[in-house]
Image (cartoon, rainbow, N blue to C red; front, side, top):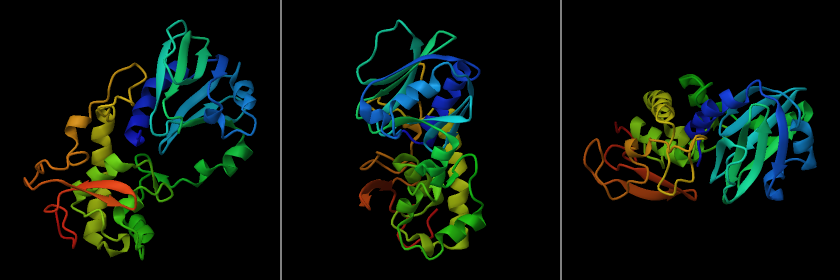
Length: 282
């Protein structure tokens, strides 16, 4: 958390403030946030007085194109969020980056746990960075059913774990993997290689509808409100989640009790009736 819908919602609000703007000043907080640059000062030097050309996204990463072929990467980690404020607004606790533009807006990265990071990379550095090894984007470049089937063939890992593998498909996390598997009627512990063609097509057909609903709702703000939109509003997807975080409550489809298990160290929420272990659920 935040996952693809939260980062995409952040991107959409951030783009009008940054695209075409000149960055006038940059300040950094905890050194941990700048750990992906060999020299943290490069972040300040490479952004200051440069124009922002495009605000993009790849998986869970904001990828911001800056003049002179530089790429400014922001990863929100587990608890990060972006805030757009006036430069004289009070500074929230755990603010680790402040970027002032020539339009007067100040872009701030707030991250309580500092699992996120920022980096500004040259083309060569970007090519060597782990972000270049991400799989295809779950929203912008979802593999076809045949491509997905080929990627899952002979895989013995649980399908829940495979959906979280950013090298397979980039952007999915715990929340939306659970929602996609519920929509597809697939048990989270099913081996990836055990899915038949119909199940693969159901899985494929569940990704975009789940993500589209979440993006339209501006993502999911949980009760801790760690994720908020840049304008300070909460995402509205929480009440629309079918299974995530709902263990012990009735399934919205059949009324059976939603359960929670741990799959390779990550929680998984599912309906045992709609998502039977042996397959065939819908």
